[in-house]
Amino acid sequence: MRGTYYLNEAEIEQWKPLFEDYIPLICERPVYWSLTDVNLGPANVKFMLTNILGYEELEWDSNGWEQDTWYKFQIPETDITLVMYYCGFTFDLTLSREWEDGSECEELLK
Image (cartoon, rainbow, N blue to C red; front, top):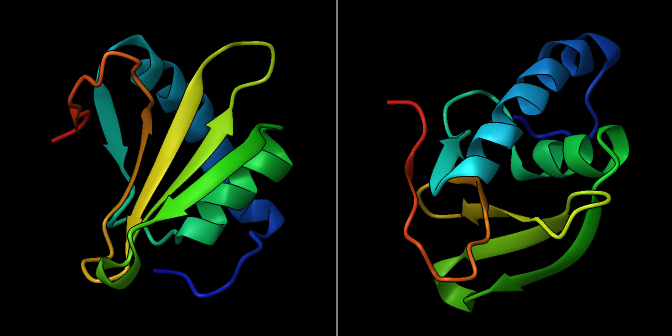
């Protein structure tokens, strides 16, 4: 996992098309996109969503000592909310849509 917040131009060019392709897929049905093993940290994903794709950060929540953290982002001109989940113990990092009915998400790519 990366330890720096900003992505350089080459990294932005590498990741932007993937984010643009995968985000619509996770918005269509209850799946999540696992970013755990792709050398991006939560700050990098947050940077991509807010600074590059123009999403608005809404709020974040944490459960304390378990080090689970959820960040919520609004997709511009929609009512769709994305949730980035990060666990400080396991280093799991996922991106999914927030489903109003509480649907459980399955992994998009296995």
